Length: 208
Image 1 (cartoon, rainbow, N blue to C red):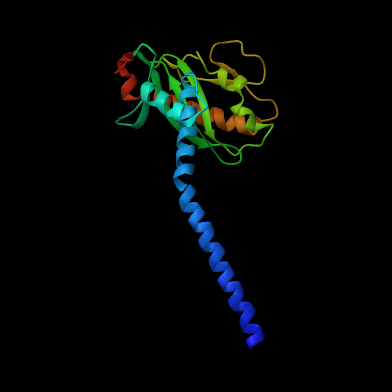
Image 2: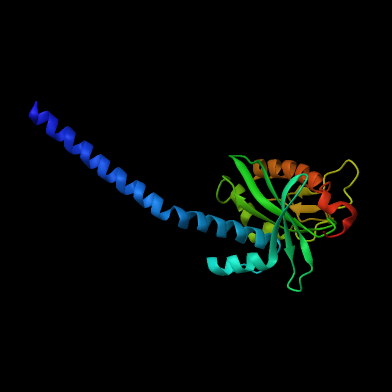
């Protein structure tokens, strides 16, 4: 009986010790992890507005305080970005929609009157690396800059994703081999853009 009890007690004590160590480390590093995640998200927001993104968390925080304001309208939270001269650069809106393997989240920025897209940044996705995961590549994201938003085409989507070189302003070159990701992205992003066009902050086409 003693021969059996000792190993059990030893393992229980060992498990409790390492459990306490892991829990303590999690508590110690929690604030740092949260700060890192916040800085990373802010970098994505700044990138959507094509604001120079610093690498150091402290610099990110300073740029955020100087250039970004978090506001809210009847539809929810949004981000107001200012140019270096203090004028309104544009507005940013968070989105989430279904991808091929999981949700795709990001932020889309538009000009003050909503007439044109400023940029787009993806904050999270589960798409296949080298295929659907290429939506985060700069060449793909850069295509959204300058795309017309308002007025929306009659009974037509704001954007059309094509597997060739774009020929008209509202076309975006899709990623070859990522048909499922692109199809879902096109569908939910166009629904999102239609909703953005109706946001109160954009009504009347004037910055607020």
